[in-house]
Length: 228
Image (tube, rainbow, N blue to C red):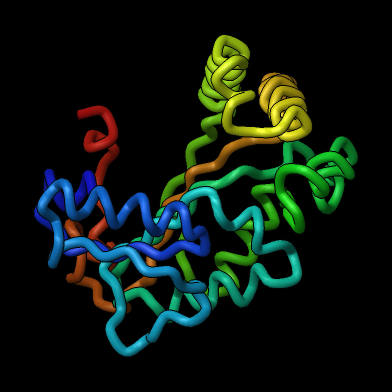
């Protein structure tokens, strides 16, 4: 929605959440973006590859892909991008290479109540698999301290709204999320988990395709765009 309103792009989104699907389609209608923005209830693996994208953003979903399916995940994205296209992959990663603090499934509590089937991988493994899918790593930013502050703010917000929360959710659900938000904030503070925002490109093979000879993508030549 932001990109369509401010930069005039044609954007398409997908989700497996029926609530997200209904909410975003309602926003599209309210903001007069019908015809420029679409939101589908669809698995990314089912996206057709005959009309590739200029840019793809994956936000907060690759934690659910897991180690076994990660090569297929990045290979699918590579096929969905035009030559020279960009991928922004944003998600939680393990803080350590062995991930002893959490383990596969994010521990019994997270597996049962919050993220069934989730698996956090270290950024070094993610980058290797991304490269093996012929996506060139361009930039990565660690947003761990930002996410710690965000989670504490969410935790404080829930604590301040417990009366309202009890009107819409069971005590078991509320208790699980009180533990989850405070515990996750602590995990980010201590570096047990991290939040990596990774930018990659599908090289075009053309030496005159970017802002500088040899760029092979539309990635800016410097990082000034980040701080505007």
